[in-house]
Image (cartoon, rainbow, N blue to C red; front, side, top):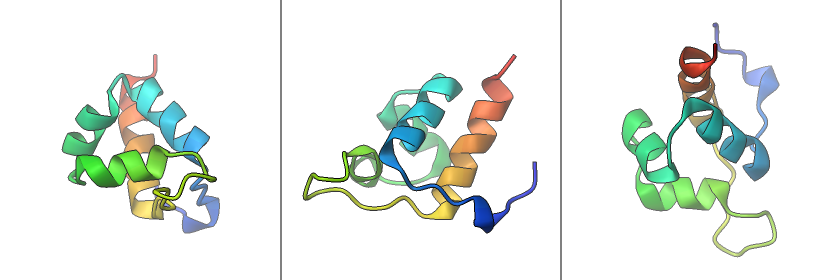
Length: 72
């Protein structure tokens, strides 16, 4: 898998799906990719919540890699 920033999708639903596919909790995923639990919660928060932050592509790609390893 090669990174391609043109595929950036910071949608919180997509980020949560990647975490689920990888078999981690938000806390576990944050630890695996080296971001704080607070930032991961922010990336996963719905768009209309004041604590939401768009996940950078690096976070998305790291989660995609974790999900790809877990996929059958």
